[in-house]
Image (cartoon, rainbow, N blue to C red; front, side):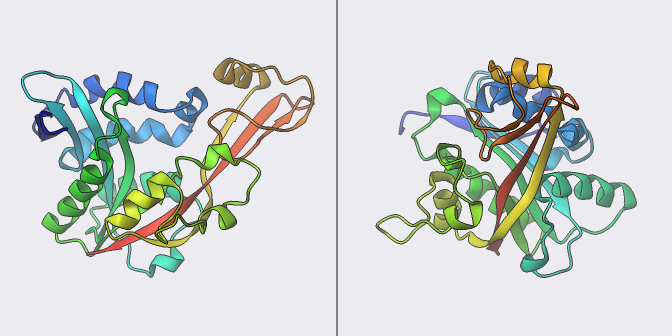
Amino acid sequence: MNDLKYDIVTAADRPDLMNLVTEVTAKAWPEFMLHDPVAALFTRLYADLPNQQFAFMESGTDRIIVLGNTVSLAWHYEPSELSDTGWDWAMQSGIDDHDAGRTPTVLCALQIVVAREFQGRGLSRTAVETMRSLARRMNLKSLIAPVRPSSKANHPLVPMEEYIHWKDDNGLPSDPWMRVHARCGGQIVKTCHQAMKISGTVAEWEEWTGMRFPRSGKHIVPGALVPVDIDLEVDRGLYIEPNVWMHHPL
């Protein structure tokens, strides 16, 4: 880890940054996660809020080690009132606030991706701290995050409300990604039950997952935090992903 040298750059520093992140993102998520329609707004983040999009880039190369995306929001309520539609709400609301010229009050974490070959080096915590520092520089009151618990896919039938309260031997969240946020000062607020909504035809879901769906009903899909609901009669598969809101007071 000590010999790893990198520079933290923003999309304002590197206008070509979005062109470099596609491969990193594609490797990080299950294919179906790339088909949330709200995710199409990522191009707006890089175009309109470039100072809020960053990457750790290996010194002397264009290789991305860590990718981070955030969006500022004009949020004037309590953390307990954060939207049940989580990630989708944050992305859409951030763009709407920007377009309306509203003054932001909080920063929302949208994505942190550590390239596979650099995982296990503590970089995820550094990325969260980078987001906290960004929020402070912007004079915002807090960092919020609709966290996607990284090991929840191993327990797709366990209710999220139960899972988020599992603890390790040190009293921290047992989920690795929630634990990173907790160690940085993040506090669990609540489950957001409809953080992302991904819909497609049965054929599309079969393509995205490499699975066959010969009957209607709920199906466990690798990488999904909860089962996917397949309805052959209407030729539709629907995945509604729950996340957990975490709040970092600054």
